[in-house]
Image (cartoon, rainbow, N blue to C red; front, top):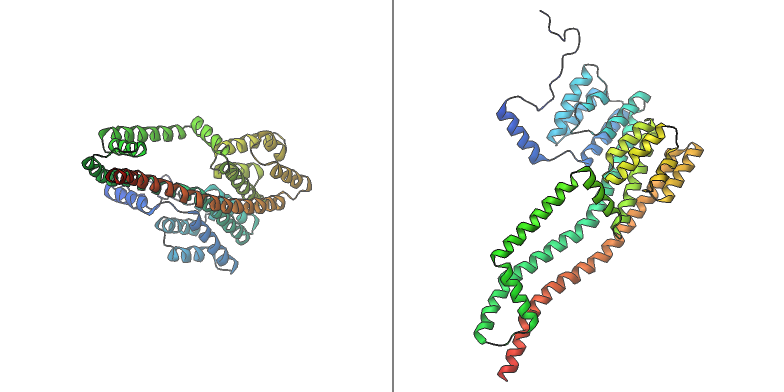
Length: 380
């Protein structure tokens, strides 16, 4: 009896998805330890593949060479499966679709457009540049927001360490001397006693519960939309997030348009790559209106989520038929704006964080040394 898939290509089992319990558990553990494929990994893949294709190396040979050089296990498994698919007559874009945990829709759409237009090497170069620019933007935002958070965590840890371990040592000395303690010292001693009591554990439990509650709210569509909307209204950081989203939107849409990807599919991909749900909803709504015949600039102007200059430049690009070139210039402008804002924020936050740490450490030391002056006056 002929198998049901006889005469067609048999269904391929994805790499690394064995059915045995032990191997699947160990594979899952290995995936968790290795982490996801980063934007940098995908940018390097696109850059190297572009160079090989441009040099005239056959696509199968190129994939095999990249597989040998690849350090990431997930990427290596994907390249192995893609080599098999392409060898059996499949296109590169279709073979990439079978690895959604490695390649996103943006990369797949640009590769498919490059294959369809016969300009795969140029499209891969644009993809590599786009991914590198997106990674640069993300790193700038992480750096701008990560620095104050890191310093604040260190400051809190220093305060707790000095309050829990240092102040009790001085407290016993003050009790033996029987001196009258200043109000500020008594307040710090009360805080120390509280942090060393069981009530501190209750407070910690409440704070952890609030954190889990906020995370659960953010995981809901309505909650995420509300929190993302509040983030956009934050002083300084809200403007930074808006300009970052504008730069990423313009750069991605420009690259997709230049690669020949249809506008509706491009907007869908841009929406998926947008991290802020308020902006993503605006793009999704604009996509619906564009499908009904409205210009993209007019649809985005109604949503009021992008800066006016961004929308105006997009309108000019639509009128002149040079939307991809105009969007690329707007992306360059906002990327420079983001870089300048990150430098300005960092220059402001660094002294502010140093002053904060100094105030925390100085307050604890002042609370400990104030009674010394009282004791000295009492002895005199």
